[in-house]
Amino acid sequence: MQHEDYMQLALEEALKGVGRTTPNPPVGAVIVNNGNIVGRGYHKKAGTPHAEVNAIADAGEAARGGAIFVTLEPCNHTGRTPPCTQAILKAGIQHVVIGAMDPNPGVVGGGADFLRSQGVDVTTAVLEEACSDLIRPFVKLSSTGLPWVILKAGLSLDGRIAYTAGQGGGVTGAQSGQLVHQLRDQVDALVIGIGTALSDNPSLTTRIPGKADARDPLRVILDSQLRLSPNAQMLSQNSQAATWVLCGEDAPEKRMQALREAGAVVHPLPLDDNHHLDIHQVVRFLGKQQLSSLLVEGGARIHGAFWQAGLVDEVQLYYAPFFIGDQGVPLMQGFALQEKPGNLPLEILSFTRAGEDVFLRALVRKNL
Image (tube, rainbow, N blue to C red; front, side, top):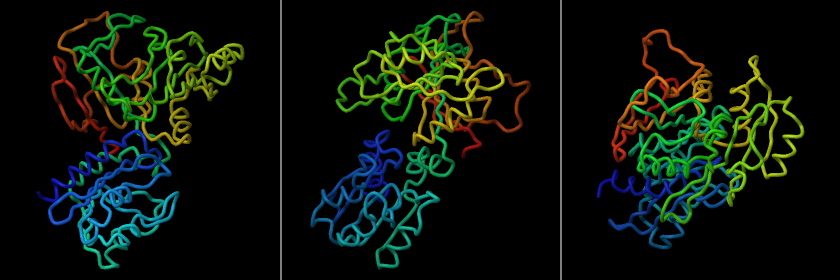
């Protein structure tokens, strides 16, 4: 096997921790000795051992003289856990292969340079693009204090996310739904507007058949005047995830109390000049709560507000193979482009089939 093959296995380990390690990044590691994989590990949760330490524990004495493949540069500082560089040296590992370098501006001293200074052979930039893609939310939160924002929607080929205004009902097929639930399992929070909450009355849970450890993300409802019913389905779920309702500072106190009694956590925030929640304030607030990734599921006004504010980092769209027509609700409201931009704002990462639907994933170029 080549370096890339072993790093791919390390990436598969890292994926097990996606959505569970915030504010830390997901990281995976494998240890190889004499061509055999002797240890595997991934970072499971902030405050617990890092991927390298778990892989070393899995390998035991078989790690000595071997090589460790790790998706992110080993840390060389003491945080909630000791430095991974020291664990690597103590284990007698002779070769460290790194996918992506640690971009955290708060980290003092590079792990790769330190290991080299101790006589360890270090190789970098193996499957760097894939390893870097995995930690985009961590990079943004640690460098800006803001979460990574994914705009997601299921829509018809003519760009409609609902058949008529105020009407719920899905547009895309079952396989797209499965991919959405897998994405929910990997993000810190899911964001919808009160319009979607009222029309769909969604549970906003994660449902993945056969996955016992599937987790619900934090549910965030943007509801300036607290129109959400205390009997909403999302508040009656048997879920470990909380439901936060973000409202205006002038929201009625009686509604606030009723939602809190129903189990919601209510956070008053400033409104903009149009008496809507200020999206910039919303995202800054969620970043301060150490949420590294937000999945914005709608509806149209919320999509438009996030896009208009320049806060979207990634787009995930699921296109169903039919048209809805001019009675349907567009993907965005409150945003209008007058002409084709000189520089296209999206870089398409993938365009694949999802059952009968087509799935598009793209990055917003300002964040590349």
